[in-house]
Length: 598
Image (cartoon, rainbow, N blue to C red):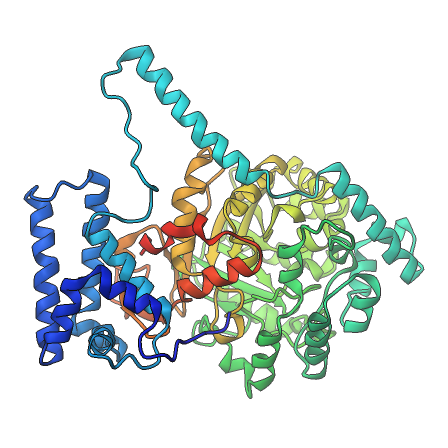
């Protein structure tokens, strides 16, 4: 999503904002300096807050809450401390605009303030024209039935949205993909037996644009991006199985499927200009959280062990794209001496009770190597949980063989030690009969499976995440985390505003049964770890940039436990995100309440 900055003196959104808020305009225009403008605006919003709390303003109670939330955000944005922390001033931009010195300010900047002041005035654009009120005169069974009808309407609305999305378990989709698989097998001269063999898929991972183009229909721009990735040694790869999930005929439902593996041009261009990807793209600060080679540690009782540094397929939003040199790289397996040293380090630290084996993807290791690795870790007395992070369940489900299950069962001993699996499905369209079969084998062995979803533009449409959660539950996978997209410039075209994830959790996920919506929305704070987004006390908006980005401050997960520095970051402009949604066929009006999530 590219920034589009308005260069005219006063944008339409600026004119709207000042027309709707004449008192704000006058305070800004008549102020002699920034502090006078600050004091005037703060006094104005303090007065509104006082009147709300003294019941002098007759807002509906829900609008009272929205007003006080918006007031808190405005007070923070106009604070000198926020200007000091961010090195900029939204107040200065507003004042300059009021005095006719707009400069390069986006519509998104003024839209943020328009909606903040809508909320302050008690008319936030959230519920439409009216607020639903239940008839308080009803009692007993009549009240219960009225409430039931109201809940039916909410359920019907959510079902209409959920019905927009397809799964890989529908008959017509299964048939379509069977044809795709046949075409791919014919290209390679492969048999059905080959197709069911995970080693065949590992051996034939597609790494070049010409093969992709020969097997599925792709846009010219996708072809050119893959070509540039090849020429600049940017990791790219798709398994034949996953390529069979692409729609090669209309209607097409595979937007989220393609977006995961076809690198956007902006992504490739940025990656190609990085002189040192090992440092430039290490968004999570893994180099600063690795006490020894192959280990990452951010929490007291658990650490990450990375025995294999590649995957059979590269996700475009991967947080470790900077570590991978090549898909299925020959030298990706950690040297035995280095791996043993890492395991010994774990054995010497009895604070560690759980080990997450990830990478790369550890399921690329042979059964024998995986068995030996699990055996060594399971012999460490203070480690009683082993977590296996793998995406092969989605990209090559045939990897879940009888022999692999037997290996995992050896180390999953109820009451003594536990093996569990964490996979990574992004969209219900990825869930196929082959995935169902693999999950059944794992669950029948008494092993739990959890899912981590990354919230990106292509899977952030209304109720799309809800469709995934419902489908995962049906096949035996527990929703675990929903991640705000990591990274900065190289992933801008995929990133989603934090406000949209908060909106999804409240307005969509909340309508699903509790056992379906077990995932937690999180932002991964570099070097520190996961910040739970639903906890408002763990993050605040500090500022709005002229381009419309919200600048957030995130408190570390150790808040109230240990003193650690917070983290400040610029989010995706909401206006740009809404524009991007519109470009993929969404009605932006359906997302209007996004502005009121902070």
